[in-house]
Length: 125
Image (cartoon, rainbow, N blue to C red; front, side, top):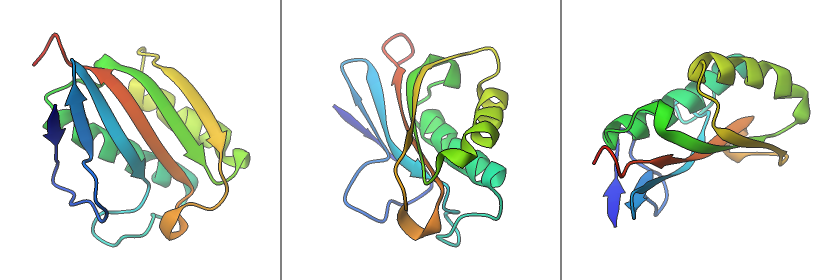
């Protein structure tokens, strides 16, 4: 097992990513800006923030986003689904990981988006 850390220091006792048996497990990445601790204004901006933080963990593991096999998206309200789906599709392009979108109510620090992912790394590490 190998822990993966990126430039964003976690506030809690966890690793942003863990590689085990050729699989990268990425911890929940909220839409909170690492410099302020709070989300940007606008749901699309929040979705981009969470996805950029996810990509940062992928890069730290030397793993391209095309190796992501599963994403879980947590939203404070399903009213954001359309906007988040649009940003998500722009981020991944033609690549379509398996996915679930869950309404979970209030998230930490006023965030409306959090996501986690699983990626294959065995063929690249």
